[in-house]
Image 1 (cartoon, rainbow, N blue to C red):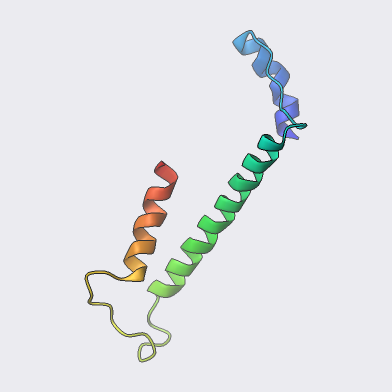
Image 2: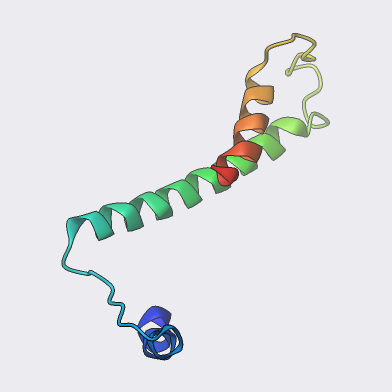
Length: 84
């Protein structure tokens, strides 16, 4: 892993000893959550880009003129989620 290779040099740089807690459940839960959120954001952006290309079935997808639409909610969530 890159972390194991870089960690000794980083420890010397900051003057303290840091370790990766592989034996703690919280580490694995947070790592799994990070991977899951990364995959979900990728799927969300793929869904939004597929949904925004209306040229392939113009008669099957109605035009969205409503104030509240699922697409707008997804776009706002996708743009605001990484800044949390």
